[in-house]
Length: 305
Image (cartoon, rainbow, N blue to C red; front, top):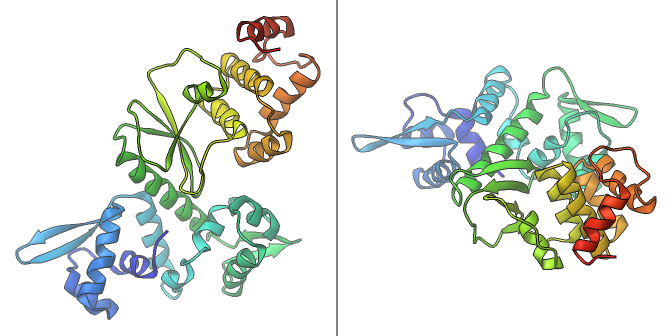
């Protein structure tokens, strides 16, 4: 997410610093430091101002920058740029509550050895503790989790704004996010989702002016399980729940995959309710689900048994 040189720049830059001055402070060549500054400018974590022949480096007002600088000032004896490289920020992102190594590994899709190695470094420095196998922050070092979250959100926002200036993030995780826009996005990593995507499964619904995209650099194609979860994240009302039920009846969705995705999106209760509704022919107490005979009529309209 951020290289060591970028973390060093954010930790070191003071008001009025020039690129050459920063290079001297950090003992790097000016050309190498300039590349780090350029990467941070692209991420909109800093910007530069021309002062005659010199370029001054100015911190942005991003909340992530403020959190990080506060930590660096308060704990100047800790080498945060060395600590926060590699997989560290991803592990800290998921330490929002006491968790085991296995829980963090599952949520972050990392090996347990990787998570354990990161947490050991933090435990050795007294930043986290462990109780009954669950790791949690000591003192006020939970700000490291807040920094990881704020930085992730900031970078997601920048990525979205480059393709849709008025887009909105509806849900996000460390490497992915679900966005609402009013414009079409033709970039490969942005996968169209929501009601427009139901046409791939022979279900045509009336669309709104909004478009929905799931950003992921690793995903090749959205599964029906993903689509069902995205739809509930977009709108958890009666109509959209009915559309998800139609999809589940139309397509042979793997129940195990659906439950796995539900955990990822924190939709376990919602997905359990939909599956229970279909298994019991509507024997579920939920005012966001149609009466069974009404759902049967809706399914018949779409020629679904």
